[in-house]
Length: 227
Image (cartoon, rainbow, N blue to C red; front, side, top):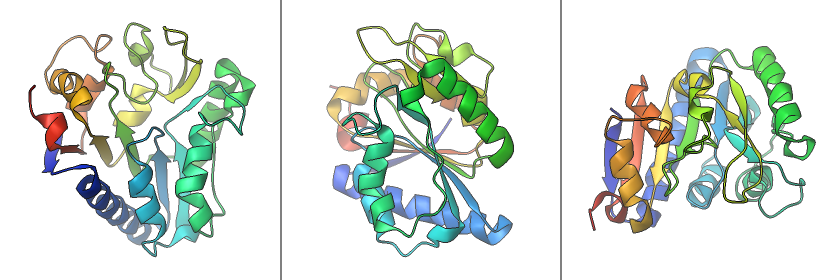
């Protein structure tokens, strides 16, 4: 079960998330000389990334990766890389960013990232994750079977007209030294409640974090209060 940290609102969540991320990064650099961090997209982490970019971290000793990516052009508003560049990388002297090649398609992009992780990442020091209002995490969507795939990186075909995705697989996510899960808003409350209750993981993929070695859930009052 993840450690649950309750915060008042999205503003406090961004501050606490920045503090946790900075702590994990500093510890990794002190212990191993480098911090390997995988970032999620979506609207929730953006404010925390902006604070992190202003925090004075040792960016030259960070290696930045991605939890998932949509198969869209690099300049698309829906690109997770584009959002991270705007919110974090543009504020830092970043030299080591390893993006997922969504523009290459899901299957080719997943193969490329699998090969890259085999060279660059013995184990992630920090993964920043979220939970969707349908219970997905990363791009492991309900009903796709993606959460059951053993591969370190998987190609995902979500339903509902969403773009194909590239996503870290459950084995890669759960191997991280630390997972920080960010959840805000009343719309996420039902999915979060399900994610904290054992059951079918293909129905609620975020249930995988019940097995995580070290996970912290940062959630605001709206996301934790039953409606």
